[in-house]
Length: 237
Image (cartoon, rainbow, N blue to C red):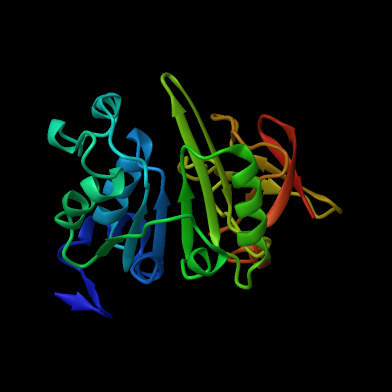
């Protein structure tokens, strides 16, 4: 079944995880992956399975024997014969018929990069990363910029989606919940939680309320930032 151009059968698990709104944004994305050693190949694979509109591969380096230990799409027949991008493209293309997978050759230009929604750079010099980050951030709307590298057991990743980007999930953990035992009517008000379990909140967290009896104006109101005053209490403005 298809809803708004999204194959809900194919992407049912993703829709259940991300929600239809996020999936609707994902299927419109055009993503550039530049640098196809181990991390770049894994990124391209996972992107194609996720289902953006297009994934474009860029890596003009000719396959070397050492690449076979990092990029699982490369074979001995590719060594010295094809670029990493050329050797990967058909493998990535087969993963998802809904995703347009292609390659580009030559040095990246501003016109090329400007045609993408998100760019992922791996195995690129620091000076080039800084230049492309500044370019992507200056666009309106900003182009999502991701730089990532893997060095054996160590890795690094940098993400910049511009000033307008908002992250509503700080750490990927499930939202914490607590039972309200009482709320004072002072300013700032103090919320006391049930003393059988610590609330687990931290200064700067945001909370919402529901099913509060008595001070019903708190229910379903805008999120409020808190300051923790103890393991069973915090203040709200």
